[in-house]
Length: 77
Image 1 (cartoon, helix red, strand yellow):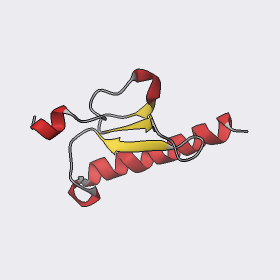
Image 2 (cartoon, rainbow, N blue to C red; image 1 turned 45 degrees about the horizontal axis):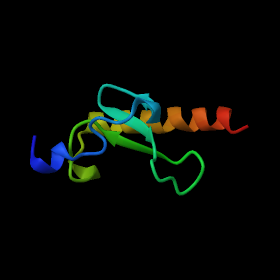
Image 3 (tube, helix red, strand yellow; image 1 turned 180 degrees about the horizontal axis):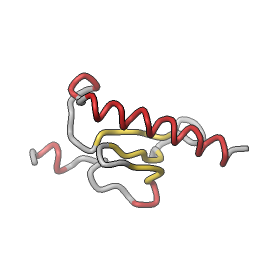
Image 4 (cartoon, rainbow, N blue to C red; image 1 turned 90 degrees about the horizontal axis):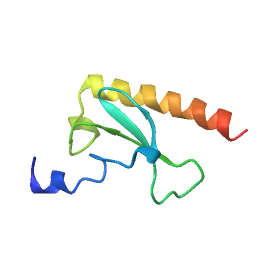
């Protein structure tokens, strides 16, 4: 783990912020939301940008996007 990774706010999130998760990605309520339900979905592995994520990580991220959308739909109605 690099020095930057040891300060990562996504590596050990507060469990109350975790909305959904998979082996390769995690969905978290944003600590500083710009709108109600603002959720961050990030890979578990450190990557510098979207294009460094593997196909499997990108697939898991999009699965979590769909899952979070359904959760928001049912909780905000």
